[in-house]
Length: 245
Ligand SMILES: [Zn+2]
Image (cartoon, rainbow, N blue to C red):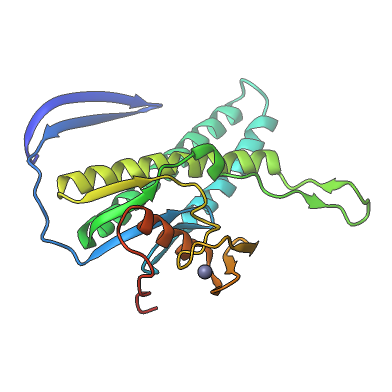
């Protein structure tokens, strides 16, 4: 263990035990990095930086949401108190554990890469509730006004719990790594970062999720534009050149 161990905790999750070691270490400043960036986090993409780097949402989240939804349905249909139901409950707990572990690992790796390369990282102060949306209802073509079932309740709630739990954790991990490395995290007011042109400040149109159109400067990637506004608001400069694609 690096550092001085301050506490040990034992934690039980279902049938597993974990040992948590809390140690105090000295901050070790990393050599100066070349980048200062704004970061836009979202649902369609995990994150987009003001210099054009895109980190996609890992596919395992969507895959696990399907597996969990399926197990959940089967568990609800199984007779209560039966061995089958018990088995399904364990399978569900196992799948959740898998998602959590893989998500945490992904957060650590993504945060590590950003902290290694960047001196300052700006993010929006997030309103978690606004970040996750239910899937759009599917209109039924045979019956105007009626909607086809799209498993919105189950799927929506699942995606929400999977993604929601993600953001707070990621930002916590990023902040801890930044502090340890002597890097700066700046949190900015999130108002209108997505629909304002980062070049001229005009209000943009947003005809689709991934695109904003400034009356003066034309169409731009919505997330990159948002990330550049975040960088500007944090005093990190704007209009940064895109990295080589
Ligand atoms: Zn503009």
